[in-house]
Structure formats: C-alpha cells, structure tokens
Amino acid sequence: MELMGSTLTATYARPKTSHFLPAISTMASSYRSTQPALAMNPSANLWRTNSYYKSSSALPIASSIQRENADLLRAKTVLYPSNRTALATRYTPEDWYKSNQNNYMESESSRKSAERLRRDTIRLMQDKEQLTRRTQENTSKNIGERLNDIAFWRAELSHETDNMVTEIAALTEVKKRLERALAETEGPFQVSQECLYHREKRMSIDLVHDDVEKDLIKEVEVIKLCQERMRRHLDRSVSQLASNRAALHELERDMNDKVTAQRIDDRCHHLRNTSDGIGYYRGIERLDPSLSLPDSWSKFTDDNILHSQSQRAATHKLRDEIDILLNTTSNEMWSQFNNVNVAFTNRISETADAKSSLQTHLAKTLQEIFQTEMLIESLKKALRDKECPLKVAQTRLEERTRRPNIELCRDNPHHRLVSEVREIEDTIHKLQERLMEAENTLQTLVKTKVNLEHDLSIKANSLFLDQEKCMSIRKSFPSMPRLVGFT
Image (cartoon, rainbow, N blue to C red; front, side):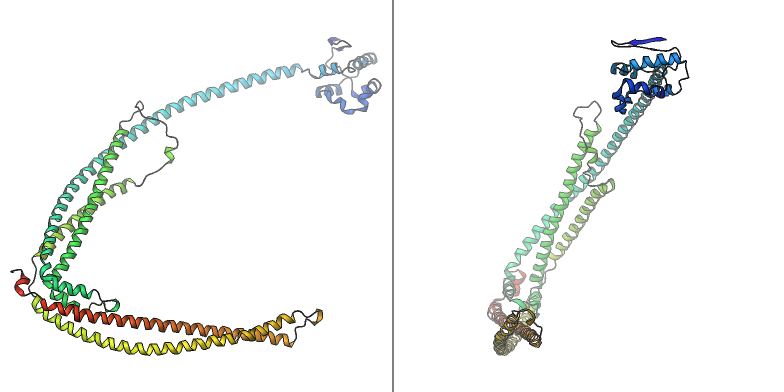
C-alpha cells in the first residue's frame, strides 16, 4: 500500500490498485457502529466527492482479509473531520492535465483574438485617417467655392446698390419739384378747398359723394384734380422712396451679411489642424441653425436684386408721370364754378325735403314708443298677477309632501296641482317671451328715434354747411387771371 498522509490522530493509506474504496453497502455497519451522529444526520455525507462514489461502485471483490483491513483503516480515518476535509479537496492527475490544457488553449485563443484586433484596429485607423483627410480637403474645396459665390453676389449687390442710390436721388429731386408746384396752387384753390373741407364736416349718411362734390372736384380740375393727383403722386413718391430705401436697406443688409459670411468662411477656409483657436464644441453637429439652402440662398439675393430693379423701374415711371402732371394744368375752373353753384342749389333743396320727411316719421315713431311702453307695463302687471297663483299651487304641493306613510298618495289633486304649476309656469314663460319681444321692439323704436333725430341733426348740419359756409364764401371766388397765375 502507498502511504497517503497522516494527521495527529490517524494514519491512512491507499492500496496499489486504482480502486481502493469499498462499496457503500460494506461500510454501512461501520458507519452505524462507529459514527452514530452520521446515522442520525444523513446530510453529513455531503462532504464526499462524486469521484469517491463513482470509484467505490466499481470496486472489485478482494480477499476477506484485505477488505477487513481496509474497513478498519477507513473507519479510523473518517472518524476525524480534518481527515475528511483533506480527502475531499484532492484532485486527480486527469483534472490537473485537463486544467493545464484548458489554460494553454485559452491563452492561445486570447493571443489570436488580440492579434486580430490589433491588425483590424491598425487598418481601421489608417482607413479613417485617409477618409478624414479626404473629407477635410473636400470641405475646404467646398468652402472655397462658397467664397467665390459670395464674391460674385457681392459684386452684383454693389452694382445694384449704386444704381438704387442714384435713382433715390433723382426721385427726391422730382418730389421737391412736386411739393413746390403743390404749394403754388394754394392761393387760387383756397375757396374751393374750404368748400370741400366744410363739406367734409357732414356727418354719417350725408357724407356722400354727391353731384356737388363731383362738380367741386371738376371745378378745380386744374387745381383740385391736379392737386389731388399731386398729393396722390406725392404720397406715391413718399411710398416709393420708402420702398426704395427699404430695398436699399435689404441690399445693404444682404451686402453686410455677405461680407460677414465671407470673412467667416475665409477664416474657416484657412483653418488647418495646426491652427490656433480650434477646439471642441460638443454636440455642434446636432445643432442645425440653418435658415436656407444653397438654392434659396442664391434666390434670396437674386430676389433682392430683382426687387430693387423693379422698384427702380417703378421709380422711373413715377418720375415720368410727375413730369406729365406738372405740364397738364387746365384753365376750366370758371365754367365749372357755375355748375357747382347749380349743384349746390339742387342739393340744398333735396336736403330740406329730406329733413321735412324725417320730422314726420319722428312724430309717428314717438307715438308708437308711447303705446309700446304701455303694453310693457301691462305685461309686467300680468306677470306679477301670476306670482300668487304659482305660489299657492307650489305651496300646496309642498304641504302635501308632508302626508304620513300611505297617505302620501299620488291622487287626482296631486295631478291637478302639478298640471296647474306647469300651466302657470308656461303662461309666465309665454308672457316673459312676449315681454322680451315688446322690450326688443321698444329698443328698436328707441333706436329708430335716435337714428331719426341723429339724421335730422345731420340734415340740419348739411344745410348749414351748404347754405351758410360754402355758398357764402363762394362769392369771393378768384378771377381767371388770378387762377392762371398772371396776377
């Protein structure tokens, strides 16, 4: 037998054969006799390894002497927990060789994976370096092309800006001429202008574009029409100047934006990997503050230039119209003066007739308002008369709800009281509707009265303006030589 080891209390050995443990059935008696604690606690056998049970099951039959010696030896060995623990922690040579082989294979696999990762990583770094360099070159090329586009549109904007400045100066000069011509018409136009201003004080419906106003406009065809056209053209010139300045402002703003963009893109175009001022801007690639695309960007500037050109064309046309207007004054004011007087006379007669008719309708409306007010009072009294019957019926219903137990019967009086309440409520509802209609009618009548009174005041005001204001000052209408400006 081969010596395995020893402890302070026992010595154990393993036979030369590969199977040295007896079958479990042969050890049962020894377990029961020597270790009653194990028999009482079956879980105490859990410390044994699987290799022990496997080898013990295949143990061949030995001689009776060797078996007895082995039983005695094993019985002595397993009595001590320290020996059992030492036996359970042992591995077989096959386990040792297998562990080494596993370590060798795992080491080789790890090295191969590391080599493959290193080769792939080097190739990836080289590819990405080339890709990054090509991308940066393409980006620089695109920025250079962008700089050329900006320079082209800057030249176009500069040319158009110069043309617009020239056109604004020309329109400003024509506008001053128009203002001086308009100021020269103030003297002869004063009378007709005062008539028109007085008639502008007409109120509401009387502020109509009637024959008098038409003839007044005709009367001052050289002055009034020319003056109105002058004012209109003056307003147009002011508006056109504002449009021109707005277009010029857009051109200048676009020019300034392009100067700034060109400066920024030029700085970006000259940036290199070794340049100063470069740094990380985390998440900047996810930020897209763009407001335009290349097509819309070029279209924006092109639209600004086209808009400026259209404004310059409109300005040139307006200057021609102003020149024609200043050369088309007429001398027909005196003949039109009589036509205006006739129109005034007819209009005064019509206004007087309308005022008389309004007074008649106002009297009838006042009578109807009085009758409607009486009707409203009658309806209110009828509604007050229905309050007590409704209270009586509802009080009866409420009192009858106090009947005890079986007496709380839905009898004919109950049905009749419910019907009475509903009937009175329906009557009140209809009376209230009729009262509302009467009040609405009264409001309509009052509104009509107010409108009639207001219209009467309007007609009186119109008569006063036409008779007292306009016709009185028309006696001082200037003569023909003064109208043509000779005196």
